[in-house]
Length: 135
Image (cartoon, rainbow, N blue to C red):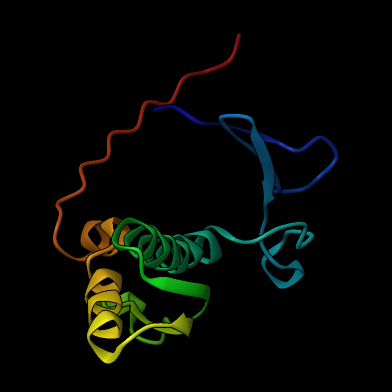
């Protein structure tokens, strides 16, 4: 899979992000030199975890026929130790619907197994970067 980013014309730092047929803007706050036109890369990283957990719970509920009406997710980050290689994320999911305690336990287990959680905590990610000069 490939996605593309390009500086938004006229913006000091903002990037136009194209993912399949979806487009969004990534930027940083005014204090960081941007114009706050969209979420920052850290915000997108955190949001990926929250979205993955909610989507995983809904997917699992649909697959198992568990009556989930809604999932609300909050992600709280603590970057106070990021320079010491510790970045903390806390997710809180509120699941509403008509389900038993046993089904709720299954939903909790599903939330813990979301693929992005695994990528962030157990998988070695290898990144290569190529930088070219435009002609």
